[in-house]
Amino acid sequence: DVHTTVEETRQMYRRANEPKKLWLAKGVAHKDIYSEMPMLYEDKVIGFLAYHMKNSTEKDKKRIISKVLLGTVKEGTHF
Image (tube, rainbow, N blue to C red):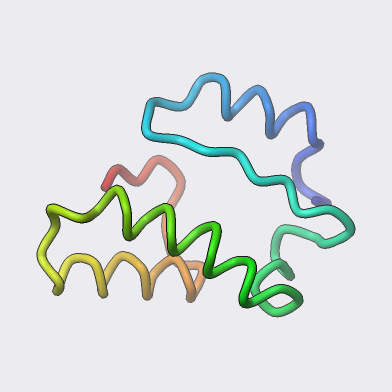
């Protein structure tokens, strides 16, 4: 990523609350992951969100997942 190093990413991960999972996509900038690896992105990211949002309403799931796909989730957002 041009904005954060792998070590900075790992530090943020260690400080994050559960549930969490770290995925480092090799050879792709953060902003390009979805366009370069859409199936893997959906498996990893959308799969994680869907699993941990299983008690959320369908409306909330769609709203949050669409924000993730559009890249409009703000830093510090809590689901």
